[in-house]
Image 1 (cartoon, rainbow, N blue to C red):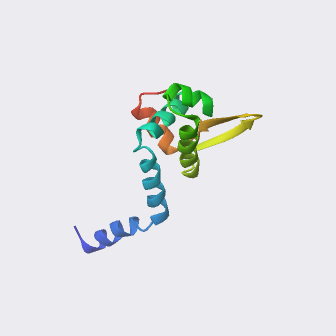
Image 2: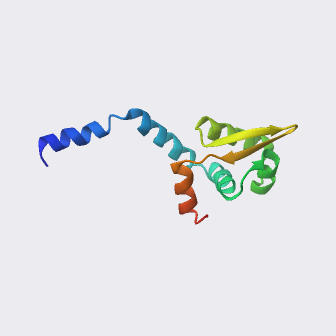
Length: 105
């Protein structure tokens, strides 16, 4: 490979912001509980924290902690309806990849 090509390819790695965001998104999927929550939110339009806790079989506190991490990574969004908080998965390349990988529509 020529030196000019190597320099050009090396420049592609300079988009540190995009690389960091991608690494953070993939890190979110490395935990089984987070992956289960993402699966549910990919499969269903929205679910409440309590519903997710019952389905996954973990505490509401653990679900809230997981959803906080997913929200910080900009993967989910929420809305409050009086005492209940509902979450849904944001449309993103990661969501599309997850749906594809998990054989979801």
